[in-house]
Length: 207
Image 1: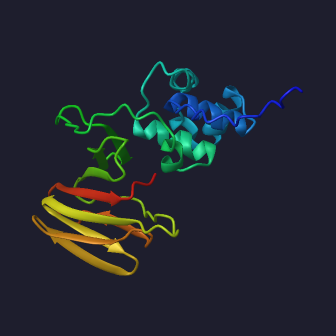
Image 2: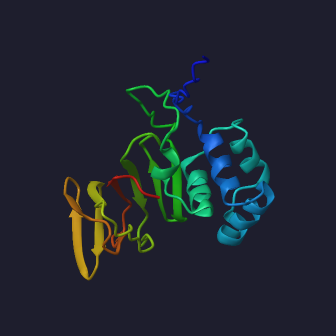
């Protein structure tokens, strides 16, 4: 009598993906060709959109994307940075050092207001050095209201920074700091005649 063949369930763990593979996978799941995806970015970001060749090189894994590039890609795909990072190959060092002349990335709000990113993409928090020239201010920001709480800390390194949170105003001088739930509408301003520099920490990281 022939013994029945037992079906054995495969226990092979799914292979972790690389960042470029994850981007390509999500794009295809959205039913977009690379050209269509690039056109979508152009519709959203206009002249500031990623160049097609840059987008292609990121998907092919030929270049490491900057945080500002990943921001565009995430918005175009309709996912958060946290979702994009889930299930990726790590391959990261446990300790990172960022030299002053090799900052991770730079967000330019306008010519007089910009923030240099200090924390690598792999970290769950974001740390940046915000520079405001005299009279400059950032646009109003508001992190999403979700189950997870988003928070920010502002530490004034130089000069004086005015923090607008909902309808309240807080002024920080060198050595002062404040923290708040960043789902509240907020923006930062320099009302003085001298440049101000502040450290901004956001946890968890959000685009």
